[in-house]
Amino acid sequence: MTITRAWLNDVMRAYKKTSLLRTAIELGVFDALAGGARTSAEIACRTGAHPRGIRILLDALAASGMVDARSGGYRLVPGAGELLVSTSPSYYGEMAKVMASDYEWESLGRLTQAVRHGGSVEEENAETPGFGYWETFASFASAVTLPTARVMADMLEPWAADRPDLDVLDVACGHGLYGFGVARRFPQATLACLDWDNVLRITEKHAAEQQVRERTRFIAGDMFEVDYQGPYDLILVTNVLHHFSPDRATELLRRAARALKPGGRVAVVSMVRTGPPAEDPEAHMFSVLMLAWTDMGEVHSDEVHHDVLTAAGFTDVQRRQVPDLAFHVFVAALADPADGATRP
Image 1 (spheres, rainbow, N blue to C red):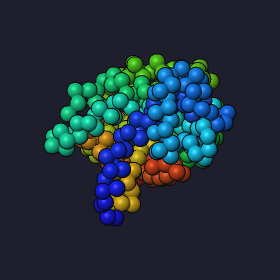
Image 2 (image 1 turned 180 degrees about the horizontal axis):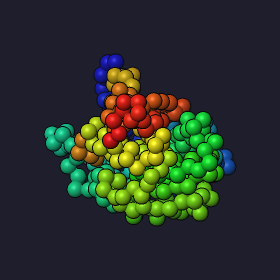
Image 3 (image 1 turned 120 degrees about the vertical axis):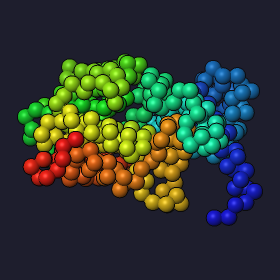
Image 4 (image 1 turned 30 degrees about the vertical axis):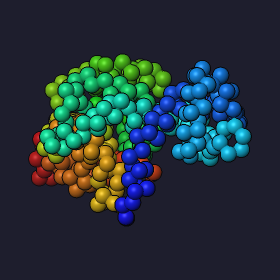
């Protein structure tokens, strides 16, 4: 590509577009437009915001292509009704609270220091006990979690469906939806959810909503230190390996291996680096957030995931990418020492 002034100006203005989108979602602007074209005064009335503020916001949204202002009044553009109206089954607006959260915003504002330091310079970051962002993630990340949970359950089905019992541990469970997806797919499953106390309050609420609360118990603490209270048939390790170096990821997976029954399985959800930056931009951009948010985290390659799983005592590694997302699901079996493998 060629760097031009227009391209640079667009990059420099990108944070303004993010602010517009966040504000419009928070005020319910897209919901107010769901019934058809409205004037700015009507939208101000529906949202309870100041008429001048709404008028300027709407014109900026129109300038950015997020609403249409060409035909008298303001209306939704194609796709907005599906993705940005909160009553839509495909609503994606809540992800703004995750992907454009104040936690990310403020940390990336100190990216220069993080680059110089080689890791996070935040007093509180993704590895800090009780980090508040994980409550936000647990509350609002279902839009990307549910399709990933379905892929995981599909991969586990041939092994899990006919088992009389299925004891499951969800490590760093967050919202709990991966474990709840397994519990809903396999009625013989019982589930233990492990995370910080402040997150488990949200997890328990989701367990009730998913109608699996009676099959779920909770373990509060640090996933590198707390007693896993096994053994389990299946352990889920979801969206955490990219927070750590390969050595630290191996350490976590070894803990999981020691808590499994013979013949048990581990299921890992992770963002995976699959190519050079121009071909795989999302993974490389996410590594920037890991630089700002962790000591040694980044998005690892497929080969690194296989290496850490093997080093932790797993074999028969299978991987599947989630359609339309950068997330991948790995399922691996606990190696049998009789086959010459070394148990961790």
